[in-house]
Image (cartoon, rainbow, N blue to C red; front, side, top):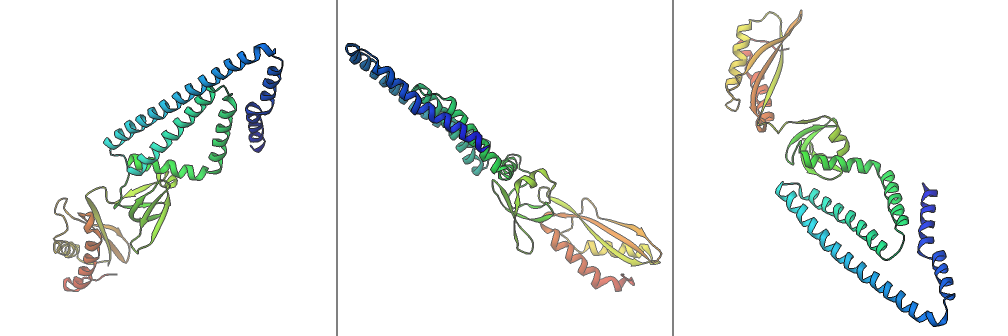
Amino acid sequence: MFTFLQTTASAAADSLSGRSFMDKIEKWTQVPQDQLWSKLFLAAMDVAGKIILALIVFYAGRWIIKKLNAIVNKIMTRRRVDPSLRSFLNSVISIALTIILVIMVIGILGFSTTSFVAIFASAGLAVGVALSGTLQNFAGGVMLLIFRPFRVGDYIEAQGRGGTVKAIQLTSTVINTVDNKTIYLPNGAVFTGVINNYTIEPTRRIEWTYSLPYGQDYEVVKKFFGDMVAQDNKILSNPKYEINISTVTGGAITVVVWAWVNHNDYSSIFYAMNERVYENYKKYNLELK
């Protein structure tokens, strides 16, 4: 790649200075004296015309670029695209169109644009290779901001980490864990991996698992857990809770209790239920393992 850049730079230098310039000087020295001033005047007029045309194209192009940016920004605002993504896309559009405009102006002035295009292309390739990981995370950030699998404030699990989303940046997603740790997740891995969003739905099913010695009256067991559920008015009545035996072994049974709650009440209801079970199981002549 380094050799390619050297070759491109050398070609650009040759086209802009040195050889082509000396060739033009040599041609001018061969012009007869009586024709020199008229040719100089015509050449000056030609150069002046090219400069004026280049300036007109440049300022007209800048005006068009600003108008296009304003139109794109208005469309993205109407579609409620994230402000950080709007700003970045506007910058990308502006830079790309400005590069095209500069190449057009260089062509109008009479310089060879092939070398400039090669320089821009090789520079873009070199930057892309050097920042491949960063660009992948950036692309993931753009996709997250467009498709919105989660928003700031949602509780998610991604890449084996769980927490509340604090910020969605262009290269990373910031989450805050329940024990108050701040974790930065790379957006490329987040977008291409499994995302578990616990907040997107208004309700969640909560599950408790209890182990009891084998041989206890199952009707008493069902009544006990039903009473424990009924004591919490935050547990939703629809869908109705369920009590089932999940496993039976020689020495114990495993009882699973399911109930539906609002996602904001999940933690408090889960631990409150465990406390009630522990405080009341002896009153029903039950044993826990």
